[in-house]
Length: 391
Image (cartoon, rainbow, N blue to C red; front, side, top):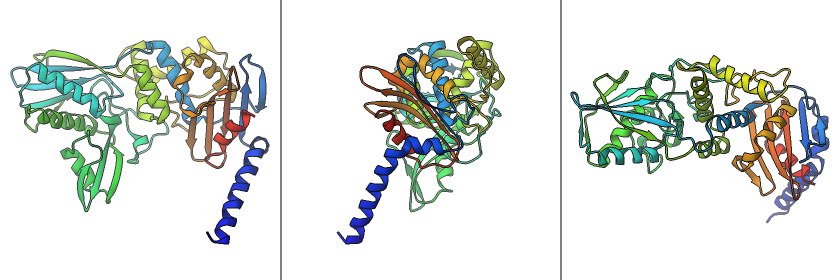
């Protein structure tokens, strides 16, 4: 190793150590930041601007998780309905917002259809009327990034498609997901490499679901003509079965928090509103569910919450409010992402926004912390600060 390379490594390690020692002091020098750390007796251990409102980013998902778990219970399973039109030999799928219809779940559905004796279909009909495709959340954008995937009553793989493009040819991006016609169309516009892109706002989500289901059916020698109908389930179609997702709500929430999945979060958000106040689905109903929950459980004088994922830059929460949420969520502490054996926390990231909230194992007990920074900062600063709070 050259001397200059060795010197550079020494300098990097030294700076990291210095940063670690001074992370709390550095935080207190920030102009747009807050921190609150309370122990198991609710005694304040560290505090900076705990009641000032900041953009919370994806730490909003902690509140979404809390309300969903309290409303439905951790063992709740989301459903999708399957109908058969004997006259036209069409399989109709009615989506009611299941946020976790991944490729492996479609395998279970296909096995069920095969077991019911389905061997030939003239086509697949998709009914995605439960959630209006025009619904848009504040903070959402029209990029093809997976975190911008739009909500849908019927969507596979979080309304995204994973592809691998090799020399201009579109291949599977994952072994469990066949390449469909729509996937090829999307992939034809992508450069070589592996991509996961969202399907955009249109009938593409239900279309892709039907195409993927058709491909899965073909793998079990169930013949399906390449016809997809969009509409509502016709009255003459008979209910074959209701599929209940093999993953319960707790597993869905774990995935939502671990991968900061905006699609799951806003699906839960919308479903809560429709469940409490009835269909049709509407953002205003979901906002009302959240505001009524907050009024019933907290004494928050001011806050702003416009979505369930934390995408909106107009959302506002304080560190103390996040502590309130975490304290009610403490029975589900195990669902939070693991930084290490002593730190379980959910991060939030937007441009010039870095937040972190969760639990610290300080020995025999767990303390609760919330960190909110609304100015530029190094990506790993929040994790370092969480470690320093343990000292």
